[in-house]
Length: 239
Image (cartoon, rainbow, N blue to C red):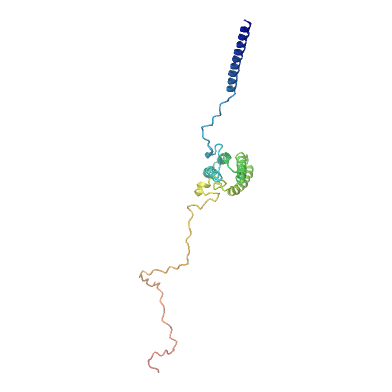
């Protein structure tokens, strides 16, 4: 009887150990599974780097192309403004400000110091335009215009160094209307300017149409020459 009790006690201990092992195994599996986190989902919306809205780095060639696509229309809009309109300077400021914002949204794949310098110079143009738009008297307007002209000269130079075609090719208000949209402030030749004839040194002879012009009789009678007694040897009798 004592041996049987020892046997049963061993079975219970073994069974309890097995149950405990099973419980620990289940807890271990649950704890490992709870630590797992779902993998991040990649965004499905494409980035709008081609239009300069965000994020995609552009090659040097694409950067210049996208920048000129922003600057070209801005130049045309400024050139089409009416310079006699009191609000033209405010419109020019807003157009140039939006142009700068569009350029700043582009992300070049490589460092572009000349392009960065152009953006700095264009920012100075925007600041001077804003100052002139808010000027309260003619003297302040003249001072702001001097700042605009100086900043545009700097931006035009840095834009050329950066390789732009349109960026930095500023037009004044009304210049596009007057000259048909000349680029870079050069204007163009007005279409109503007469072209002088070209002298190539060729002499054109008069044309003879066979018409004979009769002499004009003004009523004047010419007397015969006076006889001074000189024998001209014409013959006759000598006394």
